[in-house]
Amino acid sequence: MKWRCLDRTLDLSRHGEIMGIVNVTPDSFSDGGLFATVDAALEQARRLIAEGAALIDIGGESTRPGAAEVDEAEELQRVLPVISQLAAEHPDTILSIDTCKAGVAAAAVAAGARIINDVRGFRDAEMVRVAAESGAGLVVMHMSGTPRTMQSAPAYADLHGEITGFFRGRLDALIAAGVAAEAIVFDPGIGFGKTLDHNLSILRELDRYTIADRPILLGVSRKSFLAKVTGSDRIEDRAWGTVAITAHARELGTRLHRVHEVKSNLEALRMTEAILDGVLD
Image (cartoon, rainbow, N blue to C red; front, side, top):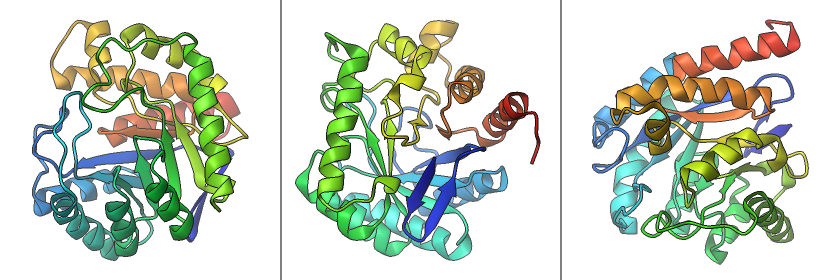
């Protein structure tokens, strides 16, 4: 349960970690462009780090259902100043670039990112090449379809088998390309080509998705399936559902949690670990 991210290795054998989300986009579903400027994104990242985020995930292209694609130059313009400044200010914080573009991934790592988070799961040959050459930590996510099409009647013959099969296939392909196994973590892609029933089924059986002892990263924060469960469409009403899932997921062994609200989720994570392990160190 170690995750190698360039020159840093996270030991997740006892304690999980929180990845804070910073969307440098005007059209994110979760924050409506609140952090679309460099200054606003930096302020938000600093706040999340102060609350205890060990990792910060920075994205310059929305992946909400139906989102329009952003060209590479625009995406670079959004994310590189944020990554460069944070890397200088907070060298101990592990920065992640949330992108599907090989050029953006390579430039972000050169600017100070240590993780590449690809919602398309490194299916693109150029992304695989960048992954192997960079030595960055990788988040390999499962998604059925594309952000534009993923919620158009998603269906599976074998939900769990198809996701774990995808993970095994990507693990083999990445290792064959020269990526170290310790650099890879997997994300089952809650809400990415899944119905409410699919999402809940995945959450019930998160312990089924650990492949070759690689950690799982879970991203449920503020997603629309929470509103379907709670009955409220307000984004702010999705916070405590996320906290509940963080505690539940850690009990099932999930060590990495990608969230918007760091403090409450970190407290839930540490409380669950104290109950499981009986220690507070």
